[in-house]
Image 1 (cartoon, rainbow over the protein chains, first blue to last red):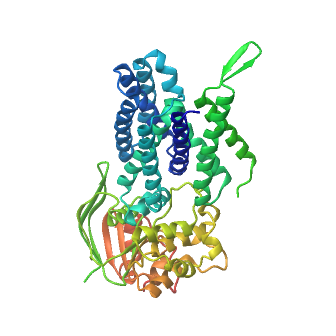
Image 2: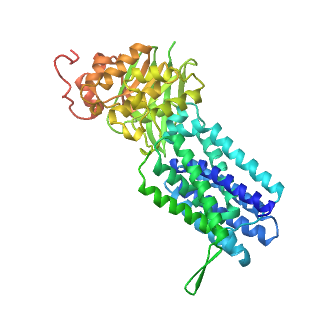
Length: 265
Length: 234
């Protein structure tokens, strides 16, 4: 592999660790649905950027930021229609994103791919991962209180609304990092599936966070190497493409199925 | 100097008036019980005092007050991989107080080391309630707000939840505002009673205000079960 491909792989693994951490808290906050919306909202931004020949990551970042603020407002409203609104935004973003994305880029926008990375983008990615890890570490106690009871957290002096916004921003940043290799449809799975594995296997918070991150990195590592070694498999007359994104998520799902067989430790 | 002064308190939720023109005060070490039928606004009153819901009127806490809150129920996912030790520690870190008090507080609410290290979804109802009381005590509060603790979930042989609260109040010199349905507890331990049914209907010592006619006015029907001889306000 070239240096640029190495950068790309290292950033994928680091992203996986961040996704495990953020996903664990997202799972405990019961916001896996909101998480899917965040990733889908990236698609119109990605598509528009491709259409106007801007760096797609910038388009995705802008759309994600707007989406994050929108979801935060919906959460703060706390009305019963939040679910409905999320459902509408989810499908609308997918439809509009598909319309505006040039068709030759659509598959990659939806399901990801593997591109090499130059040093600058690699370093930016590392800084983003560091920011996410720093955030979860710095605010872990406040997050714990707010997911147990937002009211008790507020009474204990936590600004729950601001914390939720920070968390959503960390979440969106994770989505943005994962978008590159998993695409808008699959990146949500990297956040939720490894966390589901961690949850299945552990009883304590530290083990949960650790297991989710390891499961996430293992899924990305194993999935990537399978897709590298066997880009195509021929079954009878049909040829199956083992693209990295779908392979990674399939591996994660397989790990999750295995985790169902194991007892909690 | 009162710990709390409430004047002309109104709480509206979605245009519905839940609390109307309420006023009362809380003195140091006072034990105020709030009585009222379902839907009278008791829980909302506590939430207004904690500034968790918006209100109009005045709620003035003494600047030195530290509040501990014991909610009626927690809406958390019971499968959370969290223990009371995690929660106690998280509160210590958030309040920036020493975590040394965790052991002492766990012992005073009757939770063993093993229990505070058990996931919250795996402890019994009574133990969970003790955990919540312990959580409220982190940070050394001088006022406790309790929303209807129920003695019915205590395990046989354990110190009753009301006895526990009473002992803690003595031990830590706490004032309290407690929503309670248990009239025998109110008579035994409360120093004052606020009858609430959207408006404040009465305020005074249990013996002054809890006459049968007052309870009838409050609950809207003849109220008689509490009249054991040794407790009745004669």
